[in-house]
Length: 329
Ligand code: UT7
Image (cartoon, rainbow, N blue to C red):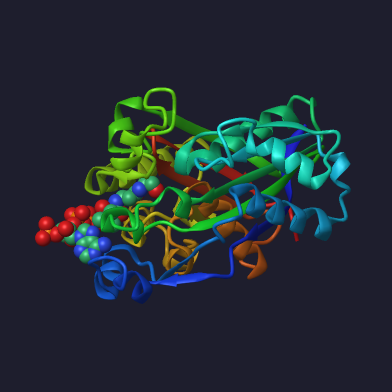
C-alpha cells in the first residue's frame, strides 16, 4: 500500500500583526525585520481560542472539500509545540470537535519539524495496511508562548495551522516515497520553552523569569538549520537518484528567508522551485510546511506526478526531509 495525500488545507487567523505594529511594542524596526528575516507580517489568534481551533478549521476544510465524513478517519496526529493543555492531547480535542468517532490519535512534539515527523509516522500506519485515512495536522499558536518584550523572538513567530489527509492507495508510483529524519538532543539548549513541564513546573518564579516563553540562540540555530536542511535534502535526492532540477517544488520550513535562500542555492534550485510565504505569516512552527503546501496547491503550483521535497529544522535539534510524488490534480 502507498500513502498518498488526497487533500490539503490550512487556516490562519484574520488578525494581522505588522512589523510597524511591533515597532510600537519593542525596540525593532521594519527594515531590520524585513532584511534579516523576510517577514512583513504575521497572524495572531484571539486570546480565548486555542491551537485546536486552528487545527479543526484546517482539517474541516479538507473533509468538506473532499466530501469525507469525519467518522471515516482512522487516526489524527497533531504536530504542535503549543498544545491546548498538558493533558489530554490536542488531538483528543480535535477528534471531539470533528466528531471523528472512529479515530484514535495523539500529539507529536517535534518543534518546527513536527509536521514532517507526523507525516512520516502516519505514512507507516497506511503502508502497513493498518489504516486507510489519517488526518495529519501541524498547528501552533506561537503568540501564546511569546514574550512581546523580547525582540530576539517576538518578531519571528506567528500563529497558523495546516493539514493533509493521507489515504491508502494501490497506485504504484505516487505518494510518500522516502524520508530521512534526525534528532540531536545536544541542541536542546539553543531553542526551547523551559518552563511548565516536569523539570520546571509552573511557579511564581518561572512566571517572573518568563520561562513559559520561547527562547533561542538565533545565530546558532541559523547556522545549524542551513547545513542540516541542505545536507539531509541532498542525501534524500541522491538516494532516490534525483537532482535539484527534478524537484518541482521544494517546500521548506519557513523560519527565515535567508535560511531558505541559502538552502535552495546549495541544492541547485531555481527560485521558482522554492516555496516562500514567510513574508505573510512569519514562523508558525509546525504550521509552516502544510500551510505553504496548501497555498502552493491553491495556486496550482504542482500537478500529478511532480516530485515534492519537504524539509524542516528546529527545536531538538530535530530535522529532516521527506520526498513525495504529488497525487492530486
Ligand atoms: O524555526 C525554528 C528554527 N529557528 C530558526 O531557524 C531561527 C534561526 N535564526 C534566525 O533566523 C536569526 O538568527 C534571527 C532572525 C533570529 C536573528 O538574526 P541575526 O542576523 O542572527 O541577528 P543577531 O541575533 O546576530 O543580531 C544582530 C543585531 C544585534 O545587534 P548588535 O549586537 O549587532 O548591535 C541584535 O541585538 O541585531 C540586533 N537585533 C535586533 N534589532 C532590531 C536582534 N533582534 C532585533 C530586532 N530588531 N528584532
